[in-house]
Image (cartoon, rainbow, N blue to C red):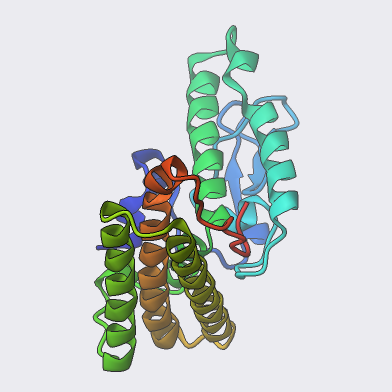
Length: 246
Protein backbone atom coordinates (compact mmCIF):
# COMPACT_ATOMS: atom_id res chain seq x y z
CA UNK A 1 0.00 0.00 0.00
CA UNK A 2 1.61 3.25 -1.09
CA UNK A 3 1.63 6.02 1.49
CA UNK A 4 0.26 8.60 -0.92
CA UNK A 5 -2.82 6.41 -1.40
CA UNK A 6 -3.68 7.00 2.27
CA UNK A 7 -3.98 10.75 1.72
CA UNK A 8 -7.18 12.53 0.81
CA UNK A 9 -7.86 13.02 -2.93
CA UNK A 10 -7.01 16.70 -2.55
CA UNK A 11 -3.63 15.95 -0.97
CA UNK A 12 -2.84 13.28 -3.58
CA UNK A 13 -3.36 15.94 -6.20
CA UNK A 14 -0.63 18.06 -4.63
CA UNK A 15 1.55 15.17 -3.44
CA UNK A 16 5.07 15.61 -4.81
CA UNK A 17 8.33 13.69 -4.63
CA UNK A 18 10.48 16.29 -6.37
CA UNK A 19 11.12 18.96 -3.74
CA UNK A 20 14.64 20.02 -4.72
CA UNK A 21 15.42 23.61 -5.69
CA UNK A 22 11.88 24.72 -4.91
CA UNK A 23 12.99 28.31 -4.35
CA UNK A 24 14.20 28.40 -7.96
CA UNK A 25 10.97 27.09 -9.48
CA UNK A 26 8.50 29.54 -10.91
CA UNK A 27 4.99 29.47 -12.32
CA UNK A 28 2.50 31.87 -13.84
CA UNK A 29 -0.07 33.69 -11.75
CA UNK A 30 -3.40 32.33 -12.96
CA UNK A 31 -4.85 35.87 -13.08
CA UNK A 32 -2.20 38.33 -14.30
CA UNK A 33 0.17 35.68 -15.76
CA UNK A 34 3.18 37.23 -14.03
CA UNK A 35 6.01 34.79 -13.20
CA UNK A 36 6.04 34.09 -9.46
CA UNK A 37 7.93 31.79 -7.11
CA UNK A 38 6.33 28.42 -6.40
CA UNK A 39 6.20 29.28 -2.69
CA UNK A 40 4.28 32.51 -3.33
CA UNK A 41 0.68 32.19 -2.19
CA UNK A 42 -0.45 35.74 -3.03
CA UNK A 43 0.64 37.47 -6.23
CA UNK A 44 1.41 41.19 -6.38
CA UNK A 45 -1.87 41.56 -8.25
CA UNK A 46 -3.63 40.48 -5.05
CA UNK A 47 -4.91 37.10 -6.23
CA UNK A 48 -4.32 33.99 -4.10
CA UNK A 49 -2.43 31.15 -5.73
CA UNK A 50 -2.97 27.42 -5.52
CA UNK A 51 -0.49 25.29 -3.60
CA UNK A 52 2.27 24.39 -6.03
CA UNK A 53 2.47 20.72 -7.08
CA UNK A 54 6.19 20.97 -6.28
CA UNK A 55 5.79 21.84 -2.60
CA UNK A 56 6.06 19.25 0.15
CA UNK A 57 4.37 19.32 3.54
CA UNK A 58 7.69 20.26 5.15
CA UNK A 59 8.30 23.13 2.75
CA UNK A 60 4.78 24.42 3.37
CA UNK A 61 5.87 25.15 6.95
CA UNK A 62 9.47 26.04 6.04
CA UNK A 63 10.90 22.93 7.72
CA UNK A 64 13.67 20.63 6.50
CA UNK A 65 12.47 17.05 5.87
CA UNK A 66 13.37 15.82 9.35
CA UNK A 67 11.75 14.05 12.30
CA UNK A 68 12.79 16.94 14.54
CA UNK A 69 10.37 19.75 13.81
CA UNK A 70 8.95 22.53 15.97
CA UNK A 71 5.33 21.51 16.46
CA UNK A 72 4.35 24.78 18.12
CA UNK A 73 5.76 26.72 15.20
CA UNK A 74 3.88 24.47 12.80
CA UNK A 75 0.62 25.15 14.65
CA UNK A 76 1.30 28.88 14.49
CA UNK A 77 2.01 28.77 10.77
CA UNK A 78 -1.03 26.59 10.20
CA UNK A 79 -3.28 29.20 11.79
CA UNK A 80 -1.69 31.95 9.70
CA UNK A 81 -2.10 30.01 6.46
CA UNK A 82 -5.68 28.99 7.21
CA UNK A 83 -6.56 32.60 7.91
CA UNK A 84 -5.13 33.61 4.54
CA UNK A 85 -7.06 30.93 2.66
CA UNK A 86 -10.23 30.86 4.76
CA UNK A 87 -13.28 30.40 2.46
CA UNK A 88 -15.19 33.14 4.29
CA UNK A 89 -12.75 35.66 2.80
CA UNK A 90 -13.77 34.65 -0.71
CA UNK A 91 -17.55 34.65 -0.51
CA UNK A 92 -17.71 37.36 -3.19
CA UNK A 93 -14.58 36.25 -5.03
CA UNK A 94 -14.34 34.54 -8.40
CA UNK A 95 -15.08 30.85 -8.81
CA UNK A 96 -11.35 30.21 -9.32
CA UNK A 97 -10.42 31.89 -6.03
CA UNK A 98 -13.10 29.91 -4.20
CA UNK A 99 -11.75 26.70 -5.71
CA UNK A 100 -8.17 27.56 -4.73
CA UNK A 101 -9.25 28.48 -1.20
CA UNK A 102 -11.01 25.16 -0.70
CA UNK A 103 -8.16 23.06 -2.07
CA UNK A 104 -5.47 24.98 -0.18
CA UNK A 105 -7.34 24.72 3.12
CA UNK A 106 -7.63 20.95 2.75
CA UNK A 107 -3.95 20.67 1.81
CA UNK A 108 -2.84 22.71 4.83
CA UNK A 109 -4.94 20.60 7.21
CA UNK A 110 -3.67 17.36 5.69
CA UNK A 111 -0.07 18.56 5.91
CA UNK A 112 -0.41 19.40 9.59
CA UNK A 113 -2.12 16.08 10.33
CA UNK A 114 0.65 14.07 8.66
CA UNK A 115 3.55 15.98 10.22
CA UNK A 116 2.00 16.14 13.70
CA UNK A 117 2.15 12.36 14.11
CA UNK A 118 5.66 10.82 14.32
CA UNK A 119 4.67 7.65 12.46
CA UNK A 120 3.04 9.38 9.50
CA UNK A 121 5.84 11.97 9.51
CA UNK A 122 8.46 9.24 9.18
CA UNK A 123 6.41 7.51 6.49
CA UNK A 124 6.18 10.77 4.58
CA UNK A 125 9.95 11.31 4.75
CA UNK A 126 10.45 7.81 3.35
CA UNK A 127 8.03 8.56 0.52
CA UNK A 128 9.80 11.81 -0.32
CA UNK A 129 12.98 9.77 -0.67
CA UNK A 130 11.58 7.20 -3.05
CA UNK A 131 9.90 4.60 -0.86
CA UNK A 132 7.05 3.18 -2.91
CA UNK A 133 5.29 1.21 -0.18
CA UNK A 134 4.11 1.79 3.36
CA UNK A 135 5.89 0.27 6.33
CA UNK A 136 2.56 -1.45 7.03
CA UNK A 137 3.45 -3.95 4.33
CA UNK A 138 7.02 -4.58 5.54
CA UNK A 139 7.34 -8.13 6.93
CA UNK A 140 8.93 -8.54 10.37
CA UNK A 141 11.39 -11.44 10.53
CA UNK A 142 12.85 -10.68 13.97
CA UNK A 143 11.53 -13.62 15.99
CA UNK A 144 12.66 -12.20 19.32
CA UNK A 145 10.72 -9.02 18.62
CA UNK A 146 7.62 -10.93 17.52
CA UNK A 147 7.75 -13.11 20.63
CA UNK A 148 8.01 -9.99 22.78
CA UNK A 149 4.94 -8.50 21.11
CA UNK A 150 3.06 -11.77 21.56
CA UNK A 151 3.94 -11.86 25.24
CA UNK A 152 2.75 -8.31 25.85
CA UNK A 153 -0.50 -9.01 24.01
CA UNK A 154 -1.03 -12.04 26.23
CA UNK A 155 -0.50 -9.85 29.30
CA UNK A 156 -3.15 -7.44 28.04
CA UNK A 157 -5.48 -10.40 27.46
CA UNK A 158 -4.83 -11.48 31.02
CA UNK A 159 -5.86 -8.06 32.31
CA UNK A 160 -9.12 -8.44 30.41
CA UNK A 161 -9.72 -11.75 32.16
CA UNK A 162 -8.92 -10.20 35.53
CA UNK A 163 -11.51 -7.51 34.88
CA UNK A 164 -14.14 -10.13 34.00
CA UNK A 165 -13.38 -12.21 37.09
CA UNK A 166 -13.29 -9.29 39.51
CA UNK A 167 -9.62 -9.49 40.44
CA UNK A 168 -8.58 -6.81 42.93
CA UNK A 169 -8.18 -3.27 41.65
CA UNK A 170 -4.68 -2.99 43.10
CA UNK A 171 -3.50 -5.99 41.09
CA UNK A 172 -5.09 -4.74 37.87
CA UNK A 173 -3.76 -1.19 38.28
CA UNK A 174 -0.28 -2.50 39.03
CA UNK A 175 -0.26 -4.56 35.84
CA UNK A 176 -1.62 -1.67 33.77
CA UNK A 177 1.07 0.68 35.10
CA UNK A 178 3.83 -1.85 34.36
CA UNK A 179 2.53 -2.51 30.85
CA UNK A 180 2.20 1.17 30.07
CA UNK A 181 5.73 1.95 31.24
CA UNK A 182 7.20 -0.97 29.30
CA UNK A 183 5.33 -0.22 26.07
CA UNK A 184 6.09 3.50 26.25
CA UNK A 185 9.79 2.84 26.84
CA UNK A 186 9.97 0.48 23.85
CA UNK A 187 7.97 2.91 21.71
CA UNK A 188 10.37 5.76 22.52
CA UNK A 189 13.39 3.56 21.85
CA UNK A 190 12.06 2.45 18.47
CA UNK A 191 11.23 6.03 17.50
CA UNK A 192 14.85 6.92 18.26
CA UNK A 193 15.90 4.11 15.91
CA UNK A 194 13.64 5.39 13.15
CA UNK A 195 14.99 8.93 13.56
CA UNK A 196 18.60 7.73 13.55
CA UNK A 197 18.13 5.66 10.38
CA UNK A 198 16.38 8.53 8.60
CA UNK A 199 19.18 10.92 9.57
CA UNK A 200 21.69 8.43 8.12
CA UNK A 201 19.51 8.05 5.00
CA UNK A 202 19.34 4.32 5.65
CA UNK A 203 15.85 4.06 4.18
CA UNK A 204 15.54 0.27 4.34
CA UNK A 205 16.43 0.10 8.04
CA UNK A 206 14.19 3.08 8.77
CA UNK A 207 11.25 1.36 7.10
CA UNK A 208 11.86 -1.85 9.03
CA UNK A 209 12.16 0.04 12.31
CA UNK A 210 9.01 1.99 11.53
CA UNK A 211 7.16 -1.28 10.99
CA UNK A 212 8.19 -2.31 14.52
CA UNK A 213 7.09 1.05 15.90
CA UNK A 214 3.63 0.37 14.51
CA UNK A 215 3.43 -2.78 16.65
CA UNK A 216 4.13 -0.76 19.78
CA UNK A 217 1.55 1.79 18.64
CA UNK A 218 -1.05 -0.99 18.44
CA UNK A 219 -0.14 -2.14 21.94
CA UNK A 220 -0.63 1.40 23.22
CA UNK A 221 -4.02 1.43 21.55
CA UNK A 222 -4.98 -1.82 23.25
CA UNK A 223 -4.35 -0.19 26.62
CA UNK A 224 -6.40 2.84 25.59
CA UNK A 225 -9.25 0.52 24.62
CA UNK A 226 -9.38 -0.63 28.26
CA UNK A 227 -10.06 2.89 29.55
CA UNK A 228 -13.90 2.69 29.61
CA UNK A 229 -13.90 -0.54 31.63
CA UNK A 230 -11.11 0.62 33.92
CA UNK A 231 -12.87 3.94 34.54
CA UNK A 232 -15.98 2.10 35.72
CA UNK A 233 -13.80 0.45 38.35
CA UNK A 234 -12.11 3.67 39.39
CA UNK A 235 -8.88 2.71 37.61
CA UNK A 236 -6.95 4.41 34.82
CA UNK A 237 -4.29 4.10 32.14
CA UNK A 238 -1.39 6.53 32.77
CA UNK A 239 -1.35 9.59 30.55
CA UNK A 240 0.48 9.01 27.29
CA UNK A 241 3.41 11.42 27.09
CA UNK A 242 4.28 10.52 23.50
CA UNK A 243 7.13 12.63 22.15
CA UNK A 244 7.01 14.66 18.95
CA UNK A 245 3.24 14.91 18.79
CA UNK A 246 0.85 17.80 19.12
